[in-house]
Image (tube, one colour):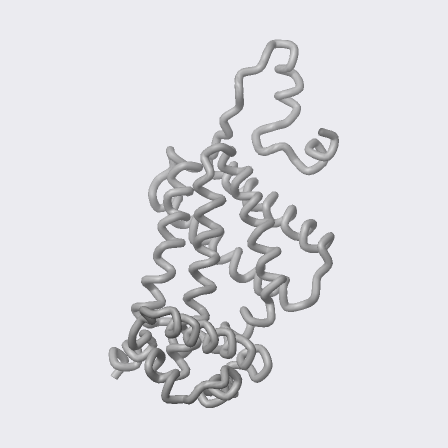
Length: 240
C-alpha cells in the first residue's frame, strides 16, 4: 500500500514541447497561488485547474493527483536550496568558515522572503515526506554537507563529522522556520544570521577545525594572535 502511495507522487510524463512546458509552468504557478491563498488542507487539483485556466484532465496528463503537484513544488524548492548550498560551500576561493557564514546569511534571507510558501509546504509534507523520490531529491544537499564536513574537519572521526553535519542541518531547518514565521526587517535578518553563524563557527572550532591563515611578517604576528583561533568576529570586520 505504501509503495503505491509513494509512486503516485511522481509526475506522469515530462513535457517535451514548448506548449507543454508552458502548460506545466502555468499549472505550477497556479498551484503556488492556490497554496498561498488556501493552504495545504484546502489545496485541490480542481482549484489549481481553475486558477490556471485549464481543464483538470490537462493537469492529469502530468500530475496524477494533488500530492504530486505539491511534491513538485517542494522538490523545486529543495533543488533551489541545494544549488545555493552547493554554490556557496564549494567555493574554494574562500576559507570554509567564511563560506559557512555566507550560507547562513543567504539561507535565513531566503527563508524570510519565501516564508508563506515554505510554511504551507511544510503542512503538505506528510503527503510525500517519506517517499523515495523525496529522499532522492534531498540526497544532493546531504552529499554537499558531507563533503564540506570532510574539508572543515579533516582530522575528526567520521562519526564526529556526521553528527556535526546533522546538527548544523537540523539547526538550519528549525531556526530558519521559527525565525521566518514573523515578519523581519533586513537588520533583524542580518543580526540573526550573524549570531547563528558565530554559533556554527565556534562549534566547528571546538571540534578541531584549524583555519588556514596566509603567511604574515613578524611585525604583524602580534595582531594575528589577537584575532584568536577563528574567523574574525563582527567587531573586527567592522573596523576593516
